[in-house]
Image (tube, rainbow, N blue to C red):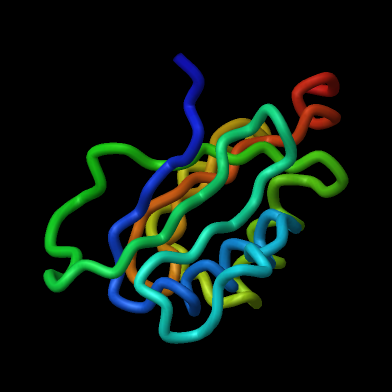
Length: 125
């Protein structure tokens, strides 16, 4: 089997897809528009896309699955700052004085995700 999409239930699929498109740099599908019940963020192959689907209930508990992101062209701290300016909220800070650790953030609908150290940072510590 091939993992085709990671699907996220949400209140506003197009708005949340636009947020994740800005975070990842991946495009929102040209077939999707504001108001659609399903909106796809197209990832580069072979990475699965992110599919946002409108659901009636709001998020009430911690995610059972979440994304762990590793920046390529920025440090962890630069990426955290960038993503916060896009609309994420700092949830838990697990950075340590020795430079290790990660940061847990919330997307605009409260879904948790983490940003870890970049490849370059992993090579220096």
